[in-house]
Structures are given as structure tokens and as C-alpha cells.
Length: 290
Ligand SMILES: Nc1nc2c(ncn2[C@@H]2O[C@H](COP(=O)(O)OP(=O)(O)O)[C@@H](O)[C@H]2O)c(=O)[nH]1
Ligand SMILES: Nc1ncnc2c1ncn2[C@@H]1O[C@H](COP(=O)(O)OP(=O)(O)O)[C@@H](O)[C@H]1O
Image (cartoon, rainbow, N blue to C red; front, top):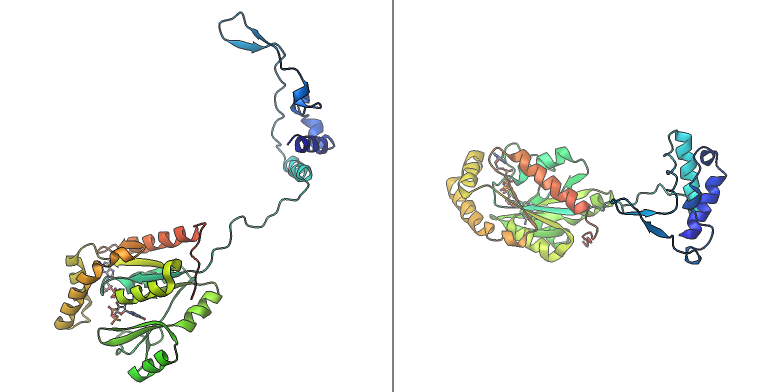
């Protein structure tokens, strides 16, 4: 430390900046402090306490004001350290991650993911393959890759799927290659799966992915939302509601729970974004293995 201070002092001594703002002579000792006797202290006659017998040190030099002074000081510090200051980022670059969004049918997974994609370009929503029929308004390759049952079975045989399940009588599965391609390009991956799919993915991905459970504020709200969507016949509605009751009990296996309350879609999306941001800022990051 003493050596550095000396070196810095000698560098600054040669700079015009120092000529205008000289360092106080006692700031850099020329002899080792151990060899110097401790300063004598005298009791002041006033009641205010102790005073040094030596005169007060001169005031520190004023901070550099002009940009050339600041530049001189910067270079002086570099010279004193014997290295240049690097402008490389101090934090490691964020790595792509996999985010799994699950929850009961009708809770708003698709709605949350759609808004998330609008907010964050770097997110890739994996379009899963399904054997179910296309609903009005759905687009092949955007909502799902709609395939026949035979085509789906071929994909299973060829081990092209990271995970697959029979969901309400129809096959659903995640194409592996799509994940690899987008991760290689630095994208974060969002997967939307049912609860059994999330359990399978937990076995495959362990702690390397983030598992988010989406819920409505209440069962009552969830049922109304499903009725309002008008995509299910009453008997299928009953199956989905009964299943949802079971699914909510599996919440404890997830990392986070986000409430998508009625009319508060934006709040749910913001919370998912906060989770992603916090995970990106973690020092001990999740190590992905797929
Ligand atoms: N396990 C698994 N579930 C999926 C996959 N893709 C979609 N799902 C889930 O299948 C369930 C039923 O999907 P769908 O019939 O499209 O109905 P909706 O999502 O409830 O409108 C939803 O809970 C989806 O999350 C997948 O690749 N694997
Ligand atoms: N916060 C919310 N408030 C009101 N309606 C919502 C909200 N989130 C989603 N919805 C609506 O609820 C229905 C079910 O949402 P959807 O995204 O299809 O659910 P999931 O993908 O989980 O089955 C849709 O009609 C959607 O527009």
C-alpha cells in the first residue's frame, strides 16, 4: 500500500494537475511509520477535550474540475497500479434459460405467454406438437404444430420430443430441436405444459429450469373464466374443473406461484418478468442440461 501510494505520488508529481493542487506534504510518509515516535498529545486547558500539539494538516486538494484534470487523474491511477483499467463488463453475460409455465386449464397460461412475448423479444415460446384438432382462430405453427396421431407416434419413436403426454385424450409434446436451435441463438425458452408435463420436466431438467405455477385468485374465478372462454362442452368443463382441484395441490413442487387475477393480466405478466430478471441476476446460476 505504501509502495502504491509512493508510486502514485511520484506519477502525480510529474503532472500539471499536481502543480495546481499539490498533495499535502504529510500525506506520503518518506520514512517507515514505525521508526517515527508517536506524536505527543497535550491536554488542552479548555473543557473541549484533547488537542494535537502539532499544527493541523493542510486541507486536501480540491477534486479535479475540468475533464482534462479528471483524465490526468485517471491515467495517474492507472500508472500507479501499473495496469490499464479494463472496460470489459464486470458481470458475466446472462445465459439463456428455460422457463416452464404451468397451471390448471383456463387459468391464463396462453394469455400470459402472449403478453410476455410482446414485452420481451428474446423469449422464444416453444410451439408444441399436438394431435388435437385445431380450434377456430388457432394457427398451425403458431399455437401448436397440428399433426395426426400417426405423425405424433413417429415423433415419439424418433425421440424427437423432450417430453410428451396424453392430455385430455390428445397427444402434446415438446420438440427438442426447437429448444436447442433457439438456445444456441441466445433466446430464453418458455414452455407451456400441463401439471403432469411439468412433473416430467422437473425429472428431466431438475433445478436447471424455472418452474412457475399460474393460478387464478380463486376456484370461482377460474370456473367463470373457463365458461367465458366457451371452448369446452359442459362434460369436458367438469373434467377440467375436477382436474384443476387436483392440480392446485401440486403447487408445492414449483419454484414460484403467480396469481393471474381477473382483469389483472398485466400484473401477472410483470411478476413473471420480475422472476426472470431476478433469476438472471443470480450469481450461482442454474446450469442447464438438456
Ligand atoms: N405435457 C404437455 N402438456 C402440454 C403440451 N402442450 C400443451 N400442453 C397442455 O395441454 C393442456 C391442454 O391443452 P389445450 O387442449 O390446448 O387446452 P388449453 O391449453 O387448456 O386451452 C394445457 O394445460 C397445456 O398446458 C406439451 O407439449 N406437453
Ligand atoms: N387476468 C385475466 N382476467 C380475465 N380474463 C383472463 C385473464 N387471463 C386470461 N383470461 C382469459 O381467460 C381465458 C383462458 O385463458 P387462456 O390463456 O386460454 O388459459 P390457458 O392457456 O391456461 O388454458 C381466455 O379467454 C383469456 O382471454
